[in-house]
Length: 449
Image (cartoon, rainbow, N blue to C red; front, side, top):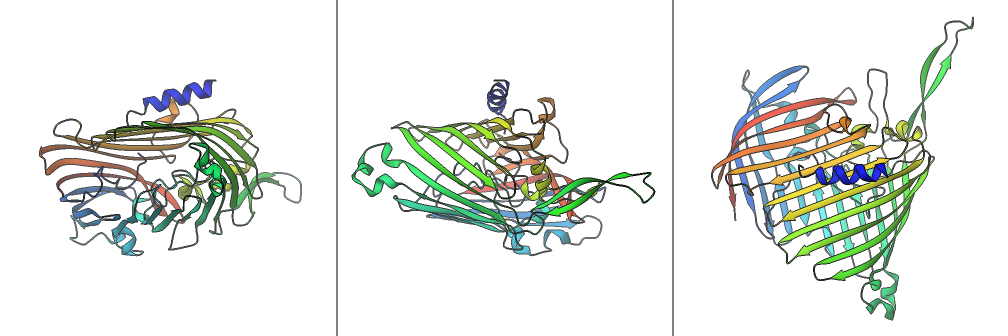
């Protein structure tokens, strides 16, 4: 009951925040395009120093029917040497330029996206939820999503990184009653069953470090060491079922059940309800509440927004890996709650929290807010994510378990914004990641059409 109370409290406190993605998509009307450009200064933390750069760029979001294109054409120039920042364009400039190329929207009969994955989810999200392939601002990658819905059956696929072996997988689903006359019955005709398989082809995905005690030949002076053991490329599979229980003009609701097994580790299951509200197209809201039964050596939403950071990270003690955390996870029960609210293009709020009983490090928080024009002359957006939450006080800290993006701007004219970005992100260092802070005051010009 305490876990459920915490979930509800934090979920509704979330009237402050979207994942700290590099550039959240603007809240545009269907078919609307936008070109945003401007100049400013970037102060970037590099190698323990704060380095200033002049910044100039254009970031278009273009819509041509169902085709959407988002680019990042930003250039940073050193204030000391006058040279372009090399790391912005090294390792494949196209990965920094292409934010997304998409067709349709998630839930359409045909949906496809190539580019940076910010909140990729498969099925109900018990295996893959809010996956982000580019949590590092300087190490953005290109992945792809594809979803096809043929009414009676369909599938969804995800490929995380075209540059190197990584996450790949998908879900196939069928609505069996639609092959019979029962498929014409409202509500229950949408009964759906699915199967999901996801694997990480990165060779480090299954590395587990085991603690051992070593003794010299004389039997004295023994010490603790950590020995790596590779369980193989990690994979997870699962089965699910969903039943529509309500379909009325302004609301619908679905019940669902998921089961998942991580190869060489444990299994878990979840049952939940998802309710969507739609007020004449002006306001939309959704509530998701899920109860989870978690076995030993199992983590729900294993492939989440922090997975690329936590897969395998050398550190001061020699290592950290997601698989090691998985191997040491106790069983228990947990809850996941999420609320989303959006009104036209005025504001959007998302808040979600997962808590696991008897696991002090099992908390996972996602907050997001965007207010582009709700308050006259003010624009604000922010996103915050944190994993391994141990208490309410620990939920709001900035360290290696956090991601943060925030923008605040003043709009003296409808087409002009004066403001600044703040990023708490990561930079690749010696096979792992270190925290990188960015402050970017800027003047931007925005044209929608």
